Length: 260
Length: 277
Image 1: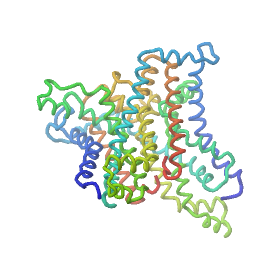
Image 2: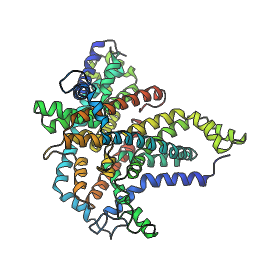
Image 3: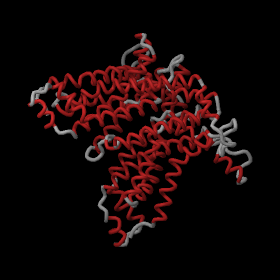
Image 4: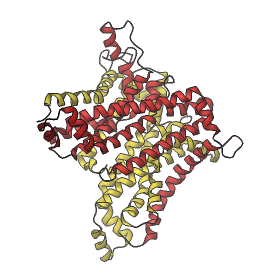
């Protein structure tokens, strides 16, 4: 005796309408030819999508967000991959405390981190906002990088490394010539996860913004406070398409969901 | 497993120092301010003052209430959805699952912005209401608790569904049909079979949804504005408008304590099955 498939179908359908429906509404609203944010749209055109690219603050904040996401993630990987290797391969003293420190960015709410960095790093030491943002984003991505790379190292047998060492390879050589090629997929997955996380991040960057320095999501929040036109809807669509595209490609070529 | 402990320590140290200096240290100083009086020394004055303000009290209880409501509602919808999804064939199950997690990859700003179009004064919902003649000029839906509730529910429902699906997949396949054959109605099937067997998933999903809602910033900022403040929007407002760092550090303390409790709870419960949490 199974529940009727009409009932389960309806439930799934309604849930998906609630979860996905708003995106369809926003895509159509962004395609309007009129000047107001409305649904159904007032004729169809791409003018708001084109307008997005002419708003200078969006262009600047997009580049800032891109910079933070790419270099923040790279930094997190440079610091995180050795840590992941140590966690997976060595019996480290005080491992619990170290893991807790590394994963702390996941536990502390971002808005507090942003405020704390502003008050105790930027203001007293004269650190630039940009540098603080960069460090905060890198630290925020660190736990993701460590976790994904650790699990991909744990799936790699230690024998291959031992074989390389016995055959006379150095420690460092065996890492770059044996381990690294085998965990490349995991590192790429960590990069994508870190990139998306950093790019969409709001709370950490909230207090860390100054004249001319704003991440894209913060800039969008500021823009919608003053202007109620469809350009934010168009930008939201473009961002959604970008994230979904990245994740789709990653899944297609990498089997992304195996890693996260 | 390699022998040399010092090499291991050396490799992990940069990451630990990086996270501690950038996260734990500044946040620690900030939190300690919540216990420092105006002339230095230990004091709980900031708390007394925080909770003596009516606005702060309202915001505190509102955040708690909304968190609980979002958690309960997502549990109800989540059970219905997860149970339906598990009945599907593996192939369509994968497709539906992909659609459920899709929103998680998209910028929360974009996700929340869509509700402005739907709930605004001339939005979709109001067009229907006016069209049906239920109201003359439409209802005020934005900047209400309901709007924030809907936004949070859409944001966090996927987490609940994922948690419930994974614990339902671990449920023995024939328990529900068996209970039905033995004459149980759907009500007792749920409370006596499904609920006890998926308790773990419910707790994992519930804590994620509750903590996520309590500490949300974007949704209350866009859909609640200054009319419906929640803890994080209140914190932002206290700092930027009033320079009130005492209140900010009290809110920070509330948020941190809650996050730590949530994480401890999740660690204890989720270890055996859920690698992610």
